Image (cartoon, rainbow, N blue to C red; front, side, top):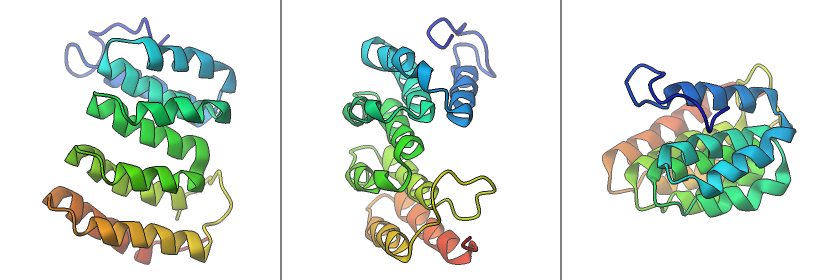
Length: 176
């Protein structure tokens, strides 16, 4: 479905935003049998946007045997593919993805690094109405805070501001 998605669908001609909606559906439903399909797109497509949405959908499919495919995609030349590969790892591994996010915090693209701050918050699932993982431990929250505290020193303002904002969110969001 994603590989043949018409490019003219979406708010802007040539947009893959509609494909992102499809990727979100698979992330919500966690349809493991779709993982080989998305892994094939992620590893063979010449389109960075296709690889990006495939990475997100692959993580959302929930088949942990594809974690290495997503980790390889964090080195993709296309920054959105790298960013959504980290998102896919969070969807796939939950709190276990924090070590991958540490690597992402050093990505050459400030857009990827800024996205990492939000993914760190997602690993905690604070305030989530339907969490997938056990409640975040004090240790996990401390590790997330430590990473975000480091990211406050990023020389690019959008990254440092985002890290600061997420730290405030962690403080202000009730734990389950």
